[in-house]
Length: 144
Image 1 (cartoon, rainbow, N blue to C red):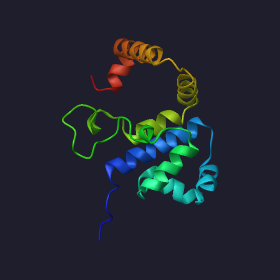
Image 2 (tube, rainbow, N blue to C red):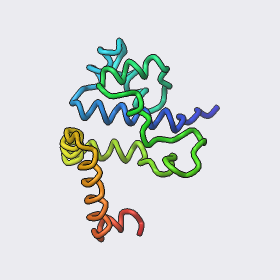
Image 3 (cartoon, one colour):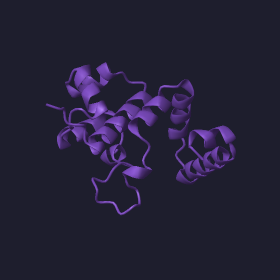
């Protein structure tokens, strides 16, 4: 009997929980304590292995100091999208986790989230995208 693959939405929400937890410098144990869970349960949520109920999502968002919508931003839409903002455009959860596992990724994420001006954040994203478009090694990684 084969095991069922995690739902893409569950995996994406879990990756956002992990990203935010790491941004706050919080361990899985500390998040688990705040939620009344073991760190193993937090791991399962972050991997998308276990689904997170609505009340638990609300609780997680409160502990991580983000609106509930943060956990879903840019993620899969459950097949309802018509191209814009759908799963194909979202980075894979492993890509996000791999990025945040580096000291540069974590430092960049922490600094970026401290910028309150949304126009300035958008300008920074645009700048980085332009730099990446001109970087031959980035193009090689993208398969271009």
